Image 1 (cartoon, rainbow, N blue to C red):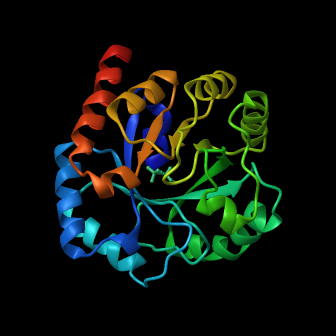
Image 2: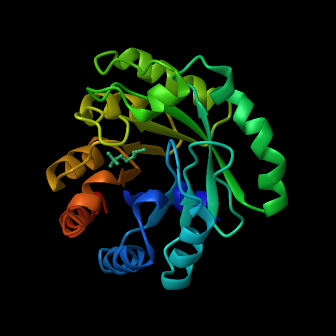
Amino acid sequence: MIYKKIKTSKQARLAVLIDPDKHNAESLLRLTEISANCKVDFFFIGGSLLMERNFENTIKIIKAHSGIPVIIFPGSNYQLSGKADAILFLSLISGRNPEYLIGQQVVAAPMIKKMGLEAISTGYILVDGGRISSTSYITQTIPVPNTKIDIAVATAQAGEMLGMKMIYLEAGSGAKNTVSAEMIAAVKQKITIPLIVGGGIRSAEQAEEICKAGADVIVVGNALEETPGLLMEISLAVHGVNKARA
Ligand code: 1GP
């Protein structure tokens, strides 16, 4: 069970986000190899808007070449596959668009059940990352202002009280600014469920700061597409924080 693995761990975990549209078989093989060397804990797979029809094939290739669990991080209800190990069953609780709070989930639930996929209910909180994100545009929702820590905390608490198993603080893929350490620490302090943080992480220093602030899982995507070598630096930073936590 993927959730149990996250929930019971005191260590920060590192997830690499794979956008299937940005890869071919060769680049996927390279990424799986680097990820194994860097002790990556999970692959997240998905995107706000996928143009190519290679979602399932991407998962197949990853699974054939690596033992790292694959978790679907869906942009919509057509990003489903029984080949993955789990799915973040997201509800965009920072938004007020019913389609992304419950609409997409109703359509996806029967298929997820049939596939036997582990669904991990996750309260997805979009935070202003300094530029309009694809998520914000596609879902037509306004992110939480990055200075409004109280709103982020209250939203996360509401998610937990609604029975969600994890909270995801998201600055948006390619964000100018990551979610601040102050916001991460404040949210972490007020919830008892695991906290995922992603969006705009492009250095080992940022990864370290985010883990130290209390993230249980950090997600890196964009920066690795430009500089795959960065993964080793980020991995060393995450594992350095873990050594200090142990
Ligand atoms: C986006 O949190 C992820 O959903 C990762 O963001 O691509 O900016 O690393 P980046």
